[in-house]
Image (cartoon, rainbow, N blue to C red):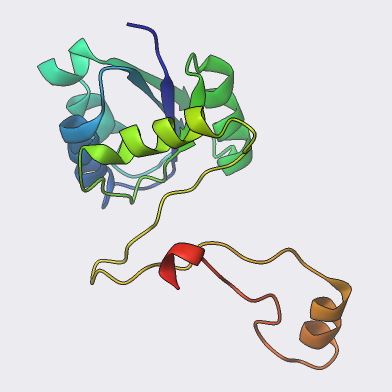
Length: 166
């Protein structure tokens, strides 16, 4: 089966969230997807936990790649390393503190992309642990917003919004 989706994750000292993240991936990652993890020089137990979990027979049957860096290379460089290795038609950046909640999450994103290929970026709704919507998008900066925030000291002049949360 061709890879439609590459799920890309960069970790750095995420030993408190990586196990839950990988368990949710294990439960919901579709057969048409691959998972590429870049560890950015973690000094805690993150890398050990990843190495142990991806030896699980389920993960062995999946397309899982682990790229290890000996130093903290940052998110940008790490995600670019993962993207270079990716084979999917779509790239999904997932932070290691995310928990996938249902089997439809990946299908909906890939399906929406296929129907709307003129769109460059698609983002899912992010939910906080209590079920409220996490505002994850900001309006583009404007000169007026910058003036209000930096000269008039009005915080949040770059308003957050997320249409799915309205």
